[in-house]
Image (cartoon, rainbow, N blue to C red; front, side, top):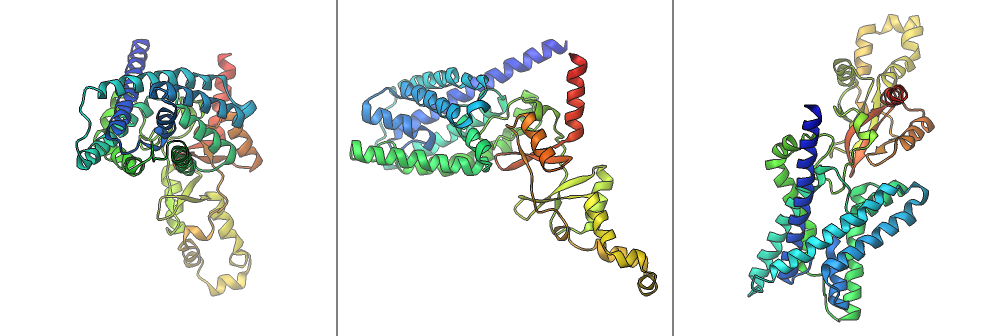
Length: 382
């Protein structure tokens, strides 16, 4: 029965993955039809179409192949052969692009600017909904996301920052190329800006309304894969063994609040967040104990004990904010990291645990004990 259930979930995931691609390409085709510029990631293929007359689906396939080659150059020995699956995925995406563009031929060209803007806005809904379906299916990412993940892994920059830089770069390249070659904006226009801003907003709205239903159908843990992410959270050992119930504390909470949380959740440490929900530190029970014992006179000087009520002193110390003693050196691992990379980071920095990040957001915690248990399981299975 379990095998049948797994097969059923696999079929559903494949369906979401493929339909997500199709809906995304329909959105791209609508943006092309609007003649107001396409989304940033599609700007290079459309530029190739505008300048050289290459059919956009074929240009998309070629672009994806080049992006895979770039990943090989960036990652070198770290490049895994499974990433070559991005090539056939690019072929599928390019074929859907061809189909969607042909489908738009049956519709009349927009009559005025108002209709063009409406089409550009509608295209962002299609693209966002396609991403909403395709990302959580957890299969091979599109080559554009693969490049962004590779750059993020090598440089250590947040995926969100890498994505922003990538989008800006391809738009600038497309704009300059079109201005030089055909003396027009070509693939870049107001629609490009609309897509860059609105797709993310639409995605969050769709996720808020339909995300829970989608995750139930897919059997996904919402903490493991967030639809707002534009990369694929692949089914890696790290994501399978990490702790998904993430407990955090604010940097302006008291040390007493931190102790209560650690005791209640039976954990030894938690990440510290600022008012923007960004990870800015880490605090453990050991940090708090070391802080208490650092007040050396309080514990070893009898004169101090005569002057200060012991319990009250402890409460005064614990009333301090978490930010006063939390470690500011943030060591994190990326969701795309291999376990050997994770082990190296933990060992090199003498850590027992670290937050797992995806697109700049924390999605879990990895403990040394998780890795040991996984390793023991492998040995027993072998």
